[in-house]
Length: 254
Length: 367
Image 1: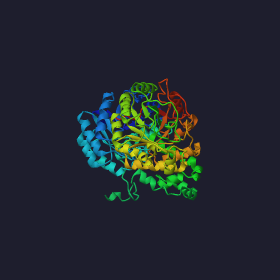
Image 2: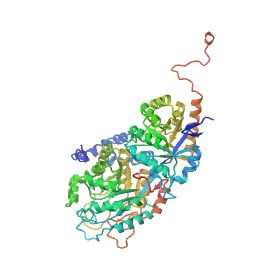
Image 3: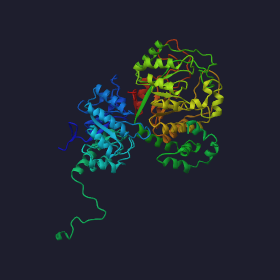
């Protein structure tokens, strides 16, 4: 079985999903089930542990690995504080670092993210930084102790697909830790494309949450992720600019 | 260029002539562009664009779904005091009005906060009238410090402050500022704010920026629709929002579309703003500034509010009392204005769910 290893955890599903933007918390268990995901990201800013009805954690099965994120953090210091609070609140030791100080495009701040990664990795967190796909910064995150890096495909919530394709491809080729394409994947075909390129996993939220039928869309993303992974492992045939006969007539000359 | 200077660049624009020049092709062009500029925004606010409200609504709905999903944050205001030194001709708190004035003691403020918290709210807005004497910054700071433990987010809707004063309140636990310019047209502003510190147009206009410089997390702005022709007021509100987003990218911006409500006191000239007009303004805001939230208060009726939800509403007030001590104190003050949606929190939550949206009490915390 082709498994994804993050830190010391082995995962069979390569689709991670988000929990924001849904019409109700009650639908979450069904989406988790249909998508087959084993890792779910939760914004700590949304978690209200004092209210059983409002606490989103109550809608996520205990067998699912929680990936609390630092949504709302504008600096490394804030991200570190949120990570520690998430751990204290019983969310485990995985953390997705999101440091964003630009509310218009929601682009991550790689510099602050690297700083937070270093601090939290030293504290024993399994750190997954959300980042602008830059090779040198990805290497710095790896050096700082990241367990994977999460380059954006397009701005959060844009559903526009992998607009950063060439940069993500470089990360896939050059990095020795899992690449999880995060943000911007708006259709199952985008997830399949990322997986065909060789990404190790994808994270999807808006495309599922804002669809007409999130449960069915969760399954669609599951199938697309699996199809893309299988295609990658099967090694895609090379692309050519001119047609080439599959049974050349002069093959005997070789 | 400051927000004041930016708005001033459009003061001499002949709005009537501009609107007369807007063609249907021009509106359709604005609607197909991925992002629109100031001129496109003005086209969407034109009388001709009323024929394209459905197309605007479809576009705004898609933008809102992508940006915010199906979630609506519920909050409620908490009135600390209604003493005021201004003479706004449209407000029940006008210092000349003979109304029952009141200011909560710290003990009463905590009691009120607990009553609100027990209704489920985690986000609140603290309001005062504008009186530095009765409600000095130190009093507001004490209130915030005292009740912070009950809430995830505390916004303030008070008189404009200096930058270092905003800093003090942020350090005490405030993270949001609501400040309505009321009216962006300078001449009308002067007429409806005849005396008192609020008559300083520029000082009020630049308050949001001073708070942003102090590191506030969110700012809510708006024009009180009805004081001046609404199309121009909506345009200036959008320009103000754009200025804040461009210069303070970390700031979370919300736009409000309050319409004047019946209140005690003097009369002022009211320009009609229909429900259709309000919808047009809201849709134009969403298309012009996709990341900005939209706040709809209980000034609007229950049915109207429910129908606005899919058009991009991100925040709604609920269980509102505009009286000082309205949630817990028997000896209440006179209300600031009459509300139109008097439903309970549970009724509003049900209505939001029926629309296919998720009512949320906690969406932020300054960790």
